[in-house]
Amino acid sequence: MLSDSDRTVRREMKCKLAIIGAGPSGLLLGQLLLRAGIDNVIIEKKSADYVQGRIRAGVLEQGTVDLLREAGAGRRIDDEGIVHRGLELVFGRCRDRIDLQGLTGDGAVTIYGQTEMTRDLMEAREASGGLSFYEAEDVRLHDVDGERPYVTFMHDSQPYRLSCDYIAGCDGYHGISRHCIPQDVLVEYERVYPFSWLGLLSDTPPVHHELVYVNHERGFALCSQRSASRSRYYLQVPPTDRLEEWPDSRFWAELKRRLPDKLSQRLVTGPALEKSITPLRSYVAEPMQYGKLFLVGDAAHIVPPTGAKGLNLAASDVGTLYRILKKAYQENRFDVVGRYSEIALRRVWKATRFSWFMTSLMHTFPSREEMAFERRMQQAEYDYYVNSSAGQKTIAENYVGLPHDLVD
Image (tube, rainbow, N blue to C red):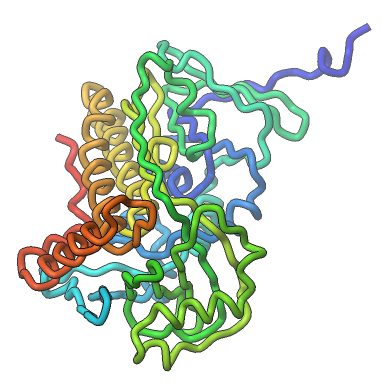
């Protein structure tokens, strides 16, 4: 007698690109390719509601905004995004503005939450008729270094086999894609920082109209926003701290201590809509390509959020892979496919350097030996960058985002 599994017929599908993961990078890549006539299927282990509900980054480089527009998902960000043409740095009693626009020739960043970006991309994909499988189980990648890679998975108790030309691993640091690269091929670089970020989201007006980065002797603080009535604040805390140790009242009191007086006096407090603790680390995996498998975004790299580069770096990976696949399929330039890792890693390391720089400049490092010396060096570093036109320009051009590399 046949078992139930024996009676189940595996569903066979084909596409040019299988995308593992329906976060912003997977959705953006899929939508760009659909509009270029390159078919793809997205496979995601979580539900659509879970993916859309994740609260993450909200500072977008112009290159990221341009890609959203090219993907047909830029209407709401153009209507609702908040353009910032400057930011403030605070060190001790010094409060200095970095003029992003003036220093870079009209450069800026746009404040727009990842939750909203994900929603826009989901709606655009649905309107385009792209195929997506949410709550997929037992996802496995096969023959990624062969001529005919494929993906198997279960969905609604039905087994599937998806044959494809290439696979894009957009499934994050904890996903399966990176683990398909043999250990004797993969090289991993990591720096773990001795602190975490405690974040709080509240329906309160922002304390300032631009982002404020604060280096205080009690630790780092960041004042950000999602809209004119919704704010996002962060505090540097020890890596061992837990959320239950930080009731709202303690968070607001500590934030006030770390802000300059003028900002502290006009800080509006309120109940937390969401709180989270995020450990900080830098991580890069090389290569970002193995055979027919490409690693995109957090699957290949993690940066501390101090430089606002995580989501933007994922978007630049997407832009690189999108342009490579367009050349391959539209111009028969398959010779460029093997250059993905080389091109992407150039920008990855530059963004990793800037994130490391901003983290080192604006945080306190309580475990460092010779603390007094390190603090004075940090002060000297700050003084140089904010009092030098070249130093300010370096910060500005990195913060608004370095140009995306072209694919020749």
